[in-house]
Image (tube, helix red, strand yellow):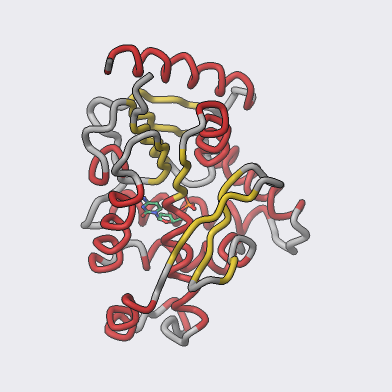
Length: 232
Ligand code: DC
């Protein structure tokens, strides 16, 4: 069976990574969480004094630091998904905090950051048999992907999901702050100059506001089988 490339783009916190992770496990594909890569660059910038008060970024400092930022993934059999490593250290927990979420969108607007991440994503996905989730996968990173999905859900539902997730991890957060962050990130992600979040013309839209995870998995598996047959 041909091993295709699957692009899953969409708004923040709409369950893209759960979909991608489960599908990758089912198919034996590699899963690349591209948001984790932008989050890792953000964490590096925060840890190295490159983000100041009011989210001001030391752009020149970050540009010079880019060659020193090494991001890799290692499969974690316990969680069934890849953990993200920044310069050899597992940062899976640190990159998911609200503090990183509050800083990541401005970092992801920077052209030199995007170029470096896209180059790495193309390299990791060059053999096919890969599922990438992000904002620009079907439009920029792999415009020839055999299957493109664009996922969305209402902002309140997305904020509620992220809130539940952070509370379960023991973070002290307020729902209102999460909702504000979801809306701010949507705005920045869709309005930036370089590779804004848009739906690829040939993407299939999934609004999962009222779907359970098994329902959306079934939907995705059916589409994947069709895309594999069409590409053979
Ligand atoms: O999917 P996520 O919430 O972990 O992504 C974090 C941020 O990274 C998000 O606000 C937008 C940015 N991002 C991007 O610009 N391009 C991607 N391919 C993936 C994420």
